[in-house]
Image 1 (cartoon, one colour):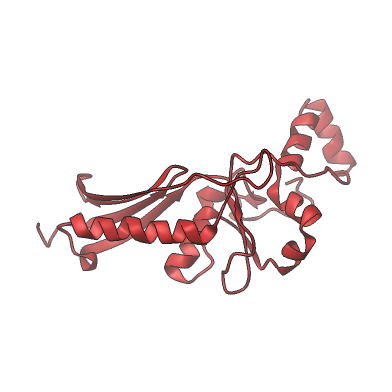
Image 2: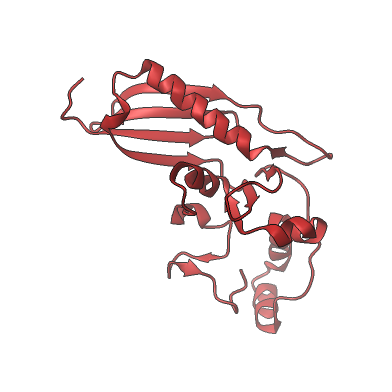
Length: 202
């Protein structure tokens, strides 16, 4: 294995498994480590949850299997990329410890829709014929459900993370995530690269 080559470690946390893959600068697959996952557990009909620590320990197992097979030593890795299942969320405290099980993207629970969005937005949504769609988004927002049904957990929540943000924090020790992972899931204004303003309907 050439020491002049550039290698990237790509981690993919899906619903069924976690894969750790080494790719060289030409896009060639060098080695793969895979750990199967129990997709979720369900404490109530329609719920889909998983222990966040289970994802982390499974990621470590996938990487351990990768290093057993890889001709490339860890010190030759130039970058690490991370992709995960979208829409899976985790409440953590200031140390990054999970406060409750992760709620997965396929969870069916719904929050109550409380309060209006303001006359301007209500009118625009009605004219655009998306008022019902917006109400559905509000019902499906996991943060709303947690705040309404587990207020003691929501009060202790320091960060409300997507799975990608949770694993990034475990890997780096910092609360950071990809901008692309936020689009469509959190109130982030990707055009301006900042959180949505107070008057923004999101």
